[in-house]
Length: 159
Image (cartoon, rainbow, N blue to C red; front, side, top):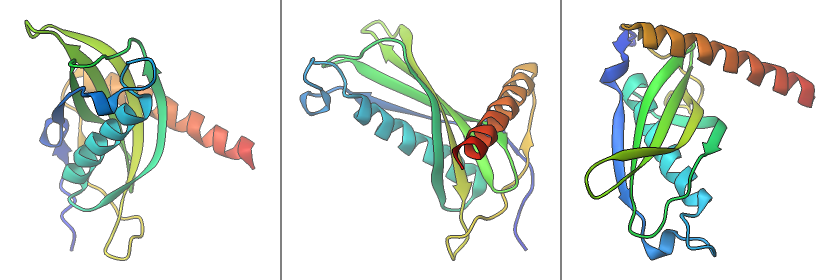
């Protein structure tokens, strides 16, 4: 029997830090957006895997908003946390910041990703419920449900 005991958001939250190097830059000497997306996807996968206790796959990346560029030698800090769980899927929010030499952080990106837990046959698998502890957690959950409904509508409109 699977352990589907509810888990707290902080149980799976994660943070990662990257230094922007020359190989991460685009032709305009800014962090290549695709590189940032890759870093975000990896972090979201870690968060979802911690919560699910099993392998996961990315099903959707949306609401990826670039607010400001990162440049060579910038420290990029990414913080990921769950905002919603369904039966087999999880929404992860990843906030990205540039950290200056004094440690001050400025947010440059927000992304929401949906990941699906997989069983040993790579089929969708149930995930534990999420414990919402704060009013902020509840607001994030409700916003995630609205995003989920918009995703459903987009899928219907595409076919």
